Amino acid sequence: MEVVDVTEGTAGGYKEVVFNVNGEDAYGQLKYESGVHRVQRVPDTETAGRVHTSAASVVVLPEADEFDVQISMNDVRKDLFCSSGPGGQSVNTTYSAVRLTHIPTGIVAQCQDQKSQLKNFDKAFAVLRSRVYELEHAKMLEETSKKRKTMVATGDRSAKIRTYNYPQGRVTEHRIGLTIYNLPNVMNGDIQEIIDQLQLAENAEKMKEGSMPNFF
Image (cartoon, rainbow, N blue to C red; front, top):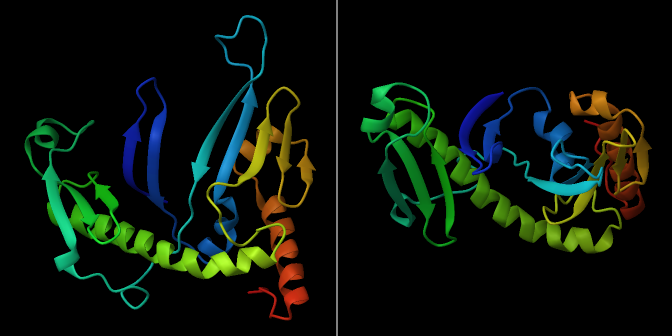
């Protein structure tokens, strides 16, 4: 895992985190995490014991290469700014952070975790290319999602896909009606059972449509 960009929240925690995951079949496994993840818990500051609900949106994109989508630099605005956060004096005085805006779509990507402006540009451009690719890919998936009931493979970022209920130690995967009473392990990253069940559901839908199941 390689962190690309981090934006901290105003009240602690994080507003947004962008990172790359490299590995065999990384996208094929993690694509099912796209969507809204709902958390139900009793905060430490809650004196009456009431359950509060919050949510995090997750977007998983395949890393688009130059053959997937062509972006002309004439369509990209490049802005430089000083990095923020830890790293010494050079972080705040050197314009090494890069923000790229794809003018035709308004899509923005930025990177500030490297000291080198060139390295930040390369990482930001890779994210920008993937986000533009996602926009085009979403148009193609729109027709597919109309045919499928569970929307397992569409990665609809507005859909509530999973609930993590701390009082009951329960995880519910809404797309396939799966409930697991093993919240601590799931929060520690043990999500393979959920992924396996989602893959089975997706393959079953593809077989109904008469297309080849995704065994690989």
